[in-house]
Image 1 (tube, rainbow, N blue to C red):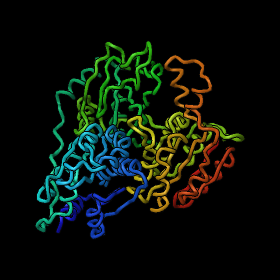
Image 2 (cartoon, rainbow, N blue to C red):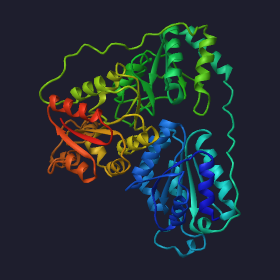
Image 3 (cartoon, rainbow, N blue to C red):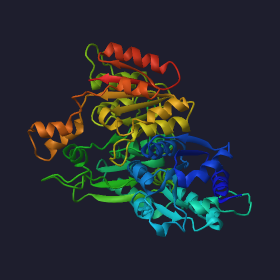
Length: 517
């Protein structure tokens, strides 16, 4: 048995059964080991950003890590953007990064780089295998680090550690520390604030607190305690739809966000961070809550968020039988017709969304209305990019579809963002994944036009426009998808879009709709 075999065995013993990969020479012994482990599903991505983004989507839907396999420092560097999104989503992930044999490193061969230095900013934990004998403890440490608390772990695997011989062993399951007990002092402090400031307390939920069972508790607290319930601006995963309590998403624009939060005197965080502006803008605040707002933490990431909400409800005397108002009937809006618009797409998708679907939203500005409408849609999971690094949508949908093969995945995708990781469509075709990709084809970086205004630039010239628009030539998403092996069609009217969406939802497998708006 060599080190690569043992590394695979440690992963499989701990139910890490998917490896998203783009390997190179230094990883060939690990690739050969994977070939001897049919229990491990190996998924090839044609670009490392697809690999790390797919691992992110998989983790968000399973709450378990997948492995990635990346080739030395440059391969890791290609995957860093979606590692950043995964770290911000607090997704468990185990990156295995191959490196030169330890004795070859002093020669400074062309692919030699500071892998630790590259990995550290986008990882919660970084470790290097010291030799074949270190494989099992290092792999177990990486697994433990990916889940306690959940986050990105990066394990560097020198080639000689992978090919070196080790004693044959049968690895066992890693024992993880239990979640810490609920902090009752924090619970009582939050309860006192809710009693003292009715109507002026906000609560931000994320992580496990944004799942349906926890949202039910949070909804009862909001309704009975006169608390306003919010989600963060960028949502890692939230269970949405009819019958579920629907938090208000804090808006992205600074002025809208500060207006939303201006009457909040106490902000309670449940697995969340205090909301802040994405960027500094001239004359605008960085903190979104008023300066005199008290910020309290009920429970932090890595703690038992649902149990903390239950304890808070008990402390407030709120019974499980007490009800909250949830969205039921869909708003009475006429069916759009004629030329296709982003609002028409959002309305159509929300109305037609299959029960138990997964929505991966990277349409940024174009699909902004969908989130509000999704409260009335069939019950589903909603995810979006969390770190502001674009190019996560297609890979995230890919990983989600591998995690949940019995569920339809809908990817709302901006045309500019989609071009960062368009290679993910090839993986969807190869793996026959049930993903419907809807490209909002407005042929521009629409969000950047808005950002120009936000920073005080009220008119732009030809040079600036050429940096923001995607025309001349226009992207042909139908041809791009077909070239990747995915069936696709174009819609520029509401009627054509509805027909294509009905067809795509009625059958399995990948399909792309280029929605020209």
